[in-house]
Image (cartoon, rainbow, N blue to C red):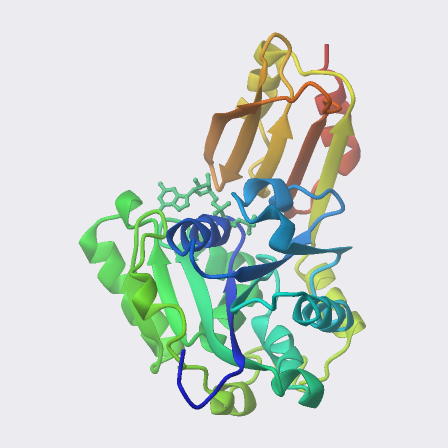
Length: 327
Ligand SMILES: Nc1nc2c(ncn2[C@@H]2O[C@H](COP(=O)(O)OP(=O)(O)OP(=O)(O)O)[C@@H](O)[C@H]2O)c(=O)[nH]1
């Protein structure tokens, strides 16, 4: 901590869907066990899943399950920050993980409000970039560009999935958009946390001078409607599915192998017939992964929770198909 400034540092972690934000968050929580970190997560979609995917420090997590992504989150975020500041003992550090579809700048504005900035100082906006999906993400959503432009620090993540030539090319593209950003290359978000936390690199000027590339939302107090309609322009939506019965493994595998290509992110906590463990499911682009987690606890109500995010999704059809995979 800087000796003269006693305010609590805040890091905003942003980055497109599936880029590795929660992976980074878990790394920070695991490696910084001595530090009292409060975490505020905000996710896209009505079903809360992220909460469970963040390891440890559960009681320190405040979740903003607002179903939408955006600017209107500021009111909720303000409340969440105030709530965190009222805790005893007060946290020594705050991390906010935005949804993959959020422009981090309105989130950052919250920390510049007078009553909050007395106690809290914005340390850095950290943007996680998925090196493998970078090109696709740029095409999918203008938000990717917003997130890169807003970054003080960029984590070029998933370096294990692409070669050095590709990484150099992405780095050049990033620097074209944001020449002042610091870029750290990482695999599984393994960054040196000394370069990431409490580094004091947030630049107010960046927020004031650089505006949206698409001509929308120039006002820092931009409205929910504004951002919401932008998502509609981009036709991005989410489909949530919840069921109190288990999935049949074979049927579900068949469904997952034939997902529409317009889905670019999926995640879920799965209850599979015959398995005692929860299965954590991730889909990013066309790469999917299912990992066994802790067993269901005896007093825990078993259920399936899944969310898919993509463009022009036929939600009825996806729900029907999932329904037919249940036992
Ligand atoms: N191969 C590889 N996989 C990674 C890396 N980082 C994260 N992943 C995987 O990518 C998937 C998504 O990671 P998350 O950390 O959940 O991504 P996120 O940005 O929090 O996702 P959203 O909350 O949906 O925006 C998971 O399956 C991770 O295990 C990496 O560097 N390499």
